[in-house]
Image 1 (cartoon, helix red, strand yellow):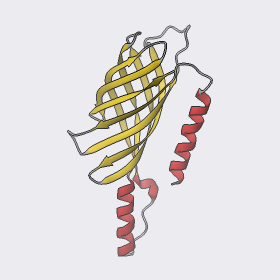
Image 2 (image 1 turned 120 degrees about the vertical axis):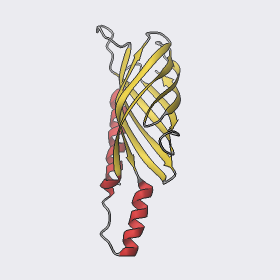
Image 3 (image 1 turned 120 degrees about the horizontal axis):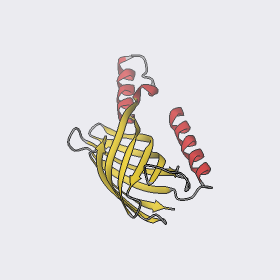
Image 4 (image 1 turned 30 degrees about the vertical axis):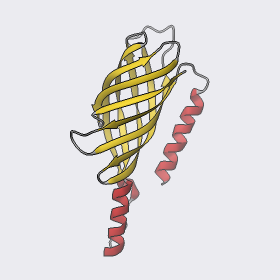
Length: 171
């Protein structure tokens, strides 16, 4: 629980610092990994725009991304935290979206199951930190996002989600 509190604190500090900047994004998204294993996510993400108007750059938009979510699988429900980079190529409303980062899942169902087992068997209690599972993440997709701001839409493929879909607001 302590790790989750620090994650929330980091997330809200990140949001607070970004209030002074322009053209950030907030969106909800979900994904499904139906090919490799039974795994679904629902999350809320925030992107802090790192572009500066006078810079020469390769990408039309790049941002630091963070998100919190719920992960559901055949094993039960867990929580996730994501941190990564987002880059867009296109320069107008229709963009190629590239994501790279890390996705950490807290396997709460596994922890509770092992906790019950250790209670019954008289074994040493499991450490909660052992149930935080870091996973590299990456994706390629399409994003509709007007440069002046407004509604945004995203769809793509990647890992750990095979297919993802999101909708939000770019401001």
